[in-house]
Image (cartoon, rainbow, N blue to C red; front, side, top):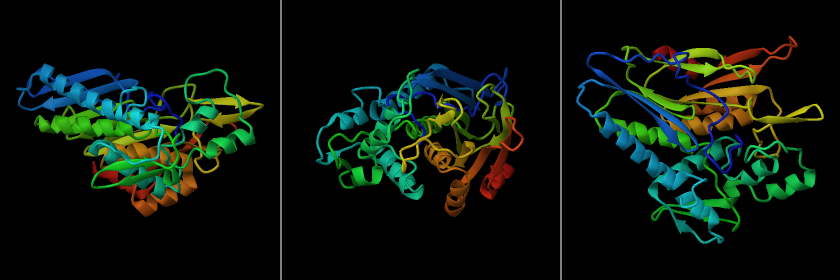
Length: 353
C-alpha cells in the first residue's frame, strides 16, 4: 500500500500536468465558455476544467458547488481533520459497531472488495506499519525497524480481520479498540467522483476533475477533442512524460514508488508497504496506472497493483478485467531505463477514445 497515513498529502506521482505539458487545455474566446477552477483540498490541490456549452452558468456558482462538495468529502474522509467522521471512528476506543454515513460505508465497501481481490495488498489499516517505517510524515530520521518491531506492528494491521461492515443500518466495527483507518489511497478518488457528479448536476457534460493526480475526464476538452493525459516517467530526478493517452468517460490514477523512500546501508526502502510481510516491496515495478469507470476504483487499484508488482498484479488485473499500465525498471543496461507493459484492457480503452 502507498504509505500515506495521517494526511491526504499529494501522492508521489503525477498523472496530469497543468502547464501545457501533458493536458491540452485552451480557453475559448467565444461560446461555449471554458470554466477553470483551482484550489486546495485534502492536503493537496484540485483542478477543474469544464466546457459550458450554454455559456449561461455563473463561474462563482460552479466554484461554490465544487467547494461545498469537497468540504463534505473532507468532513467525512479526512484523517487530518480531528472532527471528521473517520477521525472520530479512529478515536473511538471500543469494539461496538458504530453507525456510519452512507458515503463512508460506500468507500469502505469498495476498500473491502479491493482488499479481498488484491490478496490483502490494499489495506486501510496499515497506519502502524507506515509510521514504523517513517513514512507517516516528512522526516529525515527514517531507519529500518527491527524484526520485533515489525512483528508488533503487524498485530495492529489487517483490514479483513480488524474491520466489519454491516448494512441496514450501515455500521462499521473494530475487532481491536486501537484499530485505525486511513483513507488516503481511496478518498481522493472518491472526491473526484463526487465533484464530477456535482458538475453533471449542473448540466455540464465536458469536463476534467483532478485532485492530487487522481482524475476523471469525460466528453471533450475546450479544443473539442478528447482530454490528453500524460503519465509521468518514474524518474526521481526529473519530471518527464512517459506516455500520453486520450481519456474520456473514465477515471484514472497512477501510483509510484520513486519519490518517497530512504536508503540505508546501500539498500533502498520504498514507501510502498507489503501488507502481508510488513516490509517495503522489493520488486522492480516503479509505477502503475489504472483506468476505471470511477476514479475511486482507479485510485484504490493503482495502490494495490503497485504493491503486488508486475507479475502478480497483471494476473489479478486480467482476472478482474482491470485496465492497467505497469512501468518497470530495466536494470539490465546498468542505466536508468524503464519498460512499459500494458494489458489488453488498457490498450482497448486507450484505442477506443
